[in-house]
Image (tube, rainbow, N blue to C red; front, side, top):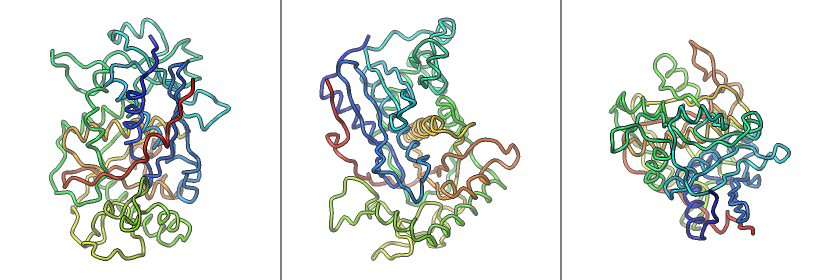
Length: 379
């Protein structure tokens, strides 16, 4: 049943949500809590959009989707049921999701949920307004979690239990722009990450030759395109922060740039661009990066939100398994390169994120805005 949240729980939920990654750490989100409706609404903050590099706001939606997944994880951790609807107001596209919070219902076996026909949605417990109209109900995220995780009793975790188990990783997860060693992510961990993405309605595939070499070439091409585009380079510069002169609450601080690859082959975005950062180290990165591609079957705003949730679920699970991650989105930001990212054999799916995975040093935390800057509370 719905219940009104105390301020401490509410701010904790939002703080967890805003720990999500976003392009250039722009944090393009706002949250509105309505006490009467026990509902937390996720809104796009279009003042934090990136018109040069993300004119369609695809990356904005992915970042907000990641924040939504964190919110669901935090709700599960706090013993709350989170009934989530994507794009609940078709006439207001900046309203990205609504989450009605209440005391957690007793989880039912998956076959009972299917028999009820109560609008269990794709994507791990969320629905669009259109989904709900068809199904005649709301998604509840109950049933069995397809993550390969097991409960202490030996059975599979329910969806709420699987989400709650990810909560410690919210604080631990940071983007690492540092070199990884050459140790491979084990096959069993890879399988869990694939299942985590699928639980949110996306596909996740590790790249092998020759697809890997193609994608590495596209990343280098995109880096060159970026450096030759004054508008894009200026936009990146606007979102970098000099910590000697300011105490940032957003953007990419200079301490998180990471070293420059001695061989100029790193897949991570170089926020220094054509400039120079005094004292920045030059070190070799891994010889053969482990890259994975996150894709969706369609390419609309609802798919971008689902991709963001899938991305963050993968990142949190990877963190729990000691796997570090970073992103290589540069070719996704160029339409003429993005379509080439598709699997050369199957040629299907829309690329939403390129993720680099491996084992390396702990990355520093990038800043976040305080909750009083991103949360409004209404009666």
